[in-house]
Image 1 (cartoon, rainbow, N blue to C red):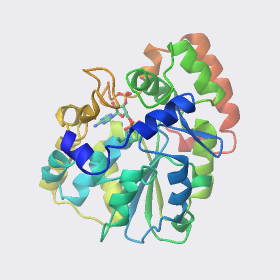
Image 2 (image 1 turned 120 degrees about the vertical axis):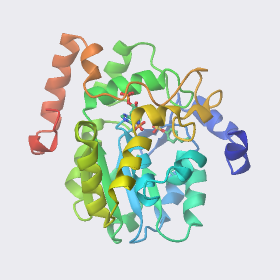
Image 3 (image 1 turned 180 degrees about the vertical axis):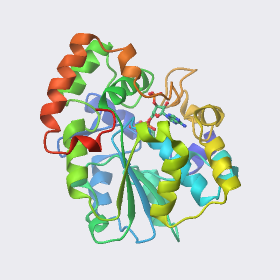
Image 4 (image 1 turned 60 degrees about the vertical axis):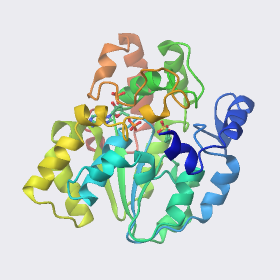
Length: 305
Ligand SMILES: Nc1ncnc2c1ncn2[C@@H]1O[C@H](COP(=O)(O)O)[C@@H](OP(=O)(O)O)[C@H]1O
Ligand SMILES: CCc1ccc(OS(=O)(=O)O)cc1
């Protein structure tokens, strides 16, 4: 783990720590708070010149939407269900984040089709995406579950402003003072703008019928998997198997970006956990705010509503 992180450019994180302290827990860029993960305002500016290629596949999501699950699925589609790659290379090197300096370096030098991940809002995205035929998979999730997932992840993380309680985090989230800003604005902008070469996938439909959604993704990407390859993909991207895979579960980050010695990305992996954590009053406030903010989009886009 250490060799993989340090040997390839992850050893200068004191600058990020410094930025975190200076900026109250976030890297601020154009008014948007980014997590302090190998990310600087200078890099976010330089990243604007990143050139997307037609054969690239981009995963875009608001943090805690199930991004790493979708990335694991894409890696296994590209390896035709063979788990060797997902078991030997950290997930952030298989599908690097373009907004991270280390990820950017890997991507810049990579030949052939690239898997790319991003949480960057559309208005700050490298403009080359709009000229390329890059296939974009846009992942959405019930924002109530994003809120709960985020709370439990940020309290064990060292790279964002840490909430003191779920009540406090609820206030931040519903007011839009959250990592990557306002969920509704973020989702609205990506959904209204990015039309061509875009497939919208929800965490909820993935949970409900993973096989069918994977088949839909394969059709979108022009990939074909044999039945045994698909079965292997479903096994190796399952919650239980990903939870044990140290190349995917973020345990490589323990002691560095993750505080808790038992901390992991893989918490519960279910839909609707918000019902176990939000009060009735909080749920009502949430409903009011989000109905208002999502009014411009057809409700059938959101399978959880
Ligand atoms: N294979 C899988 N199946 C279901 N959920 C998964 C999963 N892999 C990751 N997740 C869930 O995706 C969320 C993390 O999202 P992201 O990758 O965008 O950071 C976590 O949600 P929970 O905290 O609700 O369990 C995590 O458990
Ligand atoms: C090290 C890879 C990494 C970790 C966390 C990130 O942010 S978020 O949790 O998805 O918001 C990004 C990259």
